[in-house]
Amino acid sequence: MTLADLTRASTLGEHDFLGEQTNSEYSFSGETFAYLIETFGQEQTLEFYRSYTALPAADVRDQMPRFGGTFVAEAVFADLREQLTAEAVQKFFGMSLAELDAAVKAWLQR
Image (tube, rainbow, N blue to C red; front, side, top):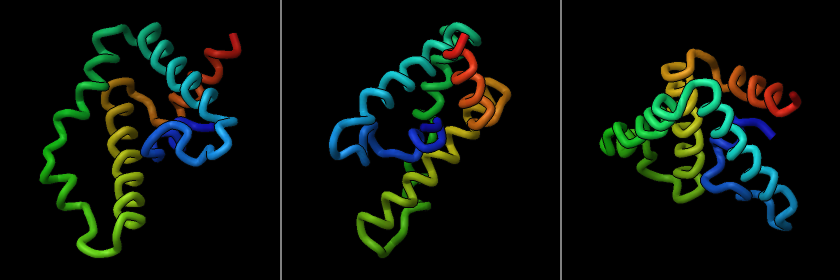
């Protein structure tokens, strides 16, 4: 499980039809939030999350395919989620999404 994979999912547990990994995904997401607050502070972490509301709807709309149906639209949304998250992680925390993933996993092993 990686933050990039979780970022691409439209919901946690999205591909876990038997419900075997959903709890782990929620736990890892929560621990990532705890890591960000402990490492960067509550205000900076909340500003990171608030930054998603600054994305103009027109930017999302312009990236959506005109044809192809739900499957194609979901793939575009997954790419957009990963791109926006990677950019925000770099902007607010000065690291790549992969670096954040590694830092959280190291923090959990302490």
